[in-house]
Every structure is written in C-alpha cells, then in structure tokens.
Image 1 (cartoon, rainbow, N blue to C red):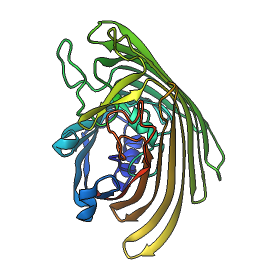
Image 2: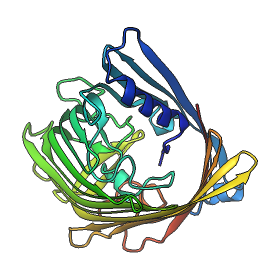
Image 3: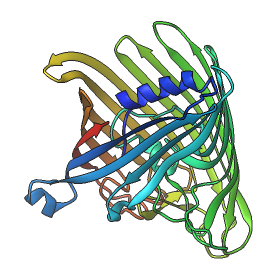
Image 4: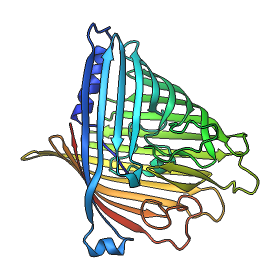
Length: 378
C-alpha cells in the first residue's frame, strides 16, 4: 500500500543521530524532511476506470522531523492522505536515548519489533503481512534495542495501538497508518521480543525469531482475550541481490459477545475496517536485484518479485495470495515504483473488500492492478 523506502534524507538522519546522540549537545539540532507522492493506477476490476485509461492523482504528503538535545532525541513522521484513505495521521513519533553505539531506548509510537525490518518487501504495496498488522506496524509503548555486530535483540512493551479516541468505551479509529485489531476489540498490554543472528561479509545474512503476545479488550463484554504471533525469518544480501523470507503463525482469541463469530476479527487502517481470519499461517518470499545505470539522473534500477500466501486455519475459508512484480527507479531524490500487483481473495486487489482476508470467496478470480508511484523525498 502506501510505502516509502529508505532514501538519502533518512540515511543521512540515521547516521547523523547515531553519532551525535552519543554526546550531550549544548545546542539543539533539528533536521526537517518529507515527501510528496503521486500515483497512477489501472485496476482489472474497475471497468469505468479502464475505459478512461486509469487514474493519476494525489497519493500522500508527509513531513519528517528529527531533533536532538542533551542526548535525548525525537523522530516523528506525519502523513496527509486524502479523506477517503484516512486523511492526516501520525505514522511514527518517539523519543529516544542512545546509551552507546549499540544500545538504544525508544518511547512513543514506535515500530513493533517483529519480522524483517524495516520492510519485509521491496515494492510500494508491501507484502501480505502488512494487511494483517505484521509488517511495519507501529504501536504506543517502550522498546529497548541491542544492535551488536553479530547479535541483535529487541524487547518491547506496548500499552496499546495508536489511540485517537479517548472515550471510556470508544472503538479504535480506522484513520491510522498500520493495521490493528479494531471493531469491538482493542489491543492492550502487548509484549514483543525479537532476536537476530548476523554473519557473512559477502552474504550479509540475518536469521531471526520474533514473538509477540498481548491482550484483546472487548468494549462490549468488558473481558480481555488474547492474541499471539510467532515468526522465523531470514534475510540475505549477495552482491546486488537481496532475499527476504518469513514464516508466521498467528492466532486471535477475543472475548466477544455471545453470537459473535469466533472465526474472524476486525482490523482497520486507511479509513476503513475489514474482516480477517482469526487464525492463520503466513508465508512470504521476496527477491530483488539492483542494476546500477548512468542514464542522466537515473542511477539505479531495482527489479523485484514479492510473494505472500495466507493459509487460513478455519475450514471452509479460502486462502489469500498476493504477488507483486516491479521495478524501483532511482533518480536523485525521485523514487518511482512501477508495480504489477496481483491478488486472490485480497481486500485491496479486487473482490469483496470486507471479508477477502476472512472467509473469502471460493469463486474469486485473480485480479491485478498496474501501479506507478512517483515520490520525491527531501
């Protein structure tokens, strides 16, 4: 969906604060950046759109701020989408303190340490895990990171997901960047742990395990169920190649009101909720290759194919599949994703938006969207 990759500004900011936050600055340091993106898309399931040759328009505008003073720093990103996709939203925003070169603490709306990070994909749409809250998820809590040369581990506690409505029994707002449990249930008291082992100068391999466990508070029954996810993941780079693969086991057990289906949960983001199977396995495989070029401002082409398969535990539910083939064109600060995204029982790729990731449709057809996203990052 709405994705950005690391860019020159983000790389500079990370390296700068990784160094300067080791010292107590006598004067404040501030860096402001952002992005403007436009999108062209042509979808197989939209006959009127196909007749007019697709649509080209506004995608997103964002502002990033990174600041540091006396050893404490802040990292925030605010995004503005159209009202149809949730409008304005805080993608991330946290305070940080770096104890030394490998130990760091973050507090606020920070990325959940689960699976391959920052992304388990190469394309603009992400991989299938994003649509069920398992890729580039951000929640409210505290996270400790130990980023050694050979071993990495992260431990985190999240009080809840992004909270935008502070009523006594308010449902989760769908105007959010990352997918969270919604409807009558709210994520509470979630613990995460992630462990990585890294080796190889030439292969740059990273083998990891991730686990999370938390509560699901039901605003109707006033009872708290639970949910958990486990993942084994591997990422490797060799010369100009990159490989990302992950296997996940996921379960949700809410304490819903009598008569409510235990087979599905509600999740929400980008202004709209949909249903997701309560229990499933998820498998992803993503491969990319860079091709450096010298075509005027164009310096690199990255060819990729990202695949995801959602195997639902409930008998009679149809599995969901996603595959994205594309090219990322880098020209200075302009990043252009040219994607052909195909989906089967995928809420954002044709079919029935409400329950494709839940029961699905046994008569569903593969649908596809040709998409070009132009993003200038500054």
